[in-house]
Length: 111
Length: 411
Image 1 (cartoon, rainbow over the protein chains, first blue to last red):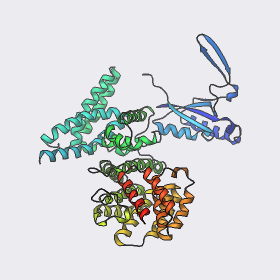
Image 2: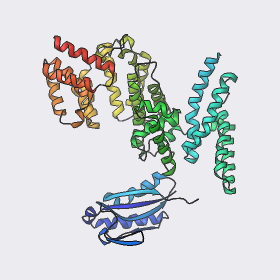
Image 3: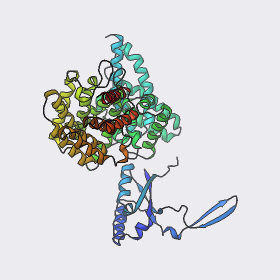
Image 4: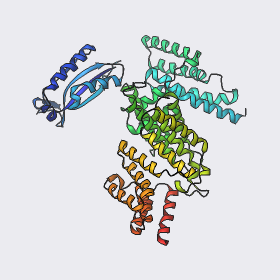
């Protein structure tokens, strides 16, 4: 099954994270690549986000993220594994799991 | 064999087979609901035919053959494309092979239990899910035991089964590293079912408690090297052995210390003692082993007059170290009273009162009332007993506490 692991960061905790985090990320990315899983992206902080919504043909642009919550969407990676446990293992290995929450969701299979 | 006997045999065999076949069929597709649907018809047919024609030599093979027809029909209805047909044929062939040699049907019940008790399943639904998938209990049966309306229970069971399939929860026994935590969830679910059954004391039998013990035996037989599984089975058997002694002939509540030990079931106690010895020899002591050891000490104390209160307090100390549970602290205080007197125990309860969960915890107030009465603190005892009565859900316990309250007024 394919799962998208959605990284939600506590941005304050992330800002205070030690520089070694990026070393951990390099190792994690390498392990992912070795396992044949390559797709994933990290995002700039939510302060750089702009949101847009169209209501009855009228476009509204909002300065900031969709929801103003403590943990912000910060990136994702995709794993293709036999089951949920294997996906959860990858999510737990992601260094971001120590600074927020990784939501693991099955990717819709279009039959 | 009379028709009644044949009926009972059919039901017993069916119950054994049910979980095994659901587990086998569902493990292949993760579709628990689909497996149940396919088996439902097979079982209805079996319970109709077996009492008349006798239980077949290989009940599993018989049921699997009938269920297979049903399952492939259902899949055929869903998949009309050729790709579906090929998959379907493969699946049918595999099941056909399994039905030909039923001894080779792998037992996936434990895997199914681990799927039902997966952390991705809502905690409160794990025990109901196990009871339904392994034992085939209806939502209605389970609902009454868990104090949820049957309609709500039915919906939540459907949702939980959907989650197994949709989230991709695996059907496997976790590896050694993850096993202790996952096994805890399985044991917790079974013990939750037993705890519900423990309250089923009025009326005939104790179906839920019986089912929980049956599941406990199953886990022990499938994971014989796990001491906690044995500890939990022992704990349930100690409790079950005292079932008949917990009420007097008039249905009134009888506390442990006043129970007639002649009404205890020696056979169950012996079995519990053996399991506990094996568990203790098998590895480090976990929560269930310690709780079973406490029950063993109560048996020795009541049956052989052995002075086991110091051991009981020490075991509670150990258990509290593991669990930090206020309930354990409360039980420890009650045991402590037997060594150091009610005033010393009441001081422990005072410290515990800061825990907000104690405010509406019936056993806290019952223990407090009991100890305060012993210590001659009448006002304190009166207040605590009144609260304990108000918080009781069991009428026999309520009557018992009323008697204590009257004794307090008269004394």
